[in-house]
Length: 112
Ligand SMILES: [Zn+2]
Image 1 (cartoon, rainbow, N blue to C red):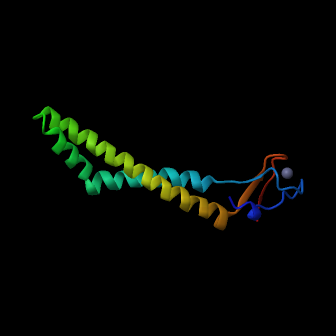
Image 2 (tube, helix red, strand yellow):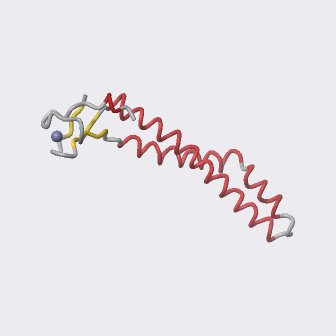
Image 3 (tube, rainbow, N blue to C red):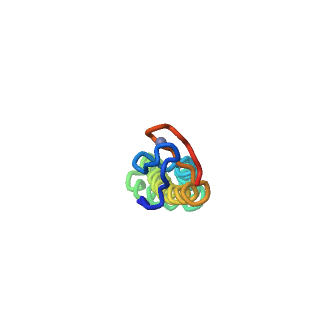
């Protein structure tokens, strides 16, 4: 993506095998996803309510099933929304703040 920002490997002196170590990006994706799912589950519950309303066409049993599936769908949507944000934030931190790179040719890890 930002290929011009990737540094040369200090040992090989080439850019071809150097990759950004994106630890924070992975952590951010998970944390963001969980936070997004939790916030939807705890805060909105609109998915559960919508599911319950739909499920109410089939009395009692349908209401419960509808609430669970509706809440689950909302939580999953929240997870992916949060994961996307967390992924971007983590990627930014990895590239701009931490700036650790690894060369896949010689295995060297270095900071810039
Ligand atoms: Zn190297």
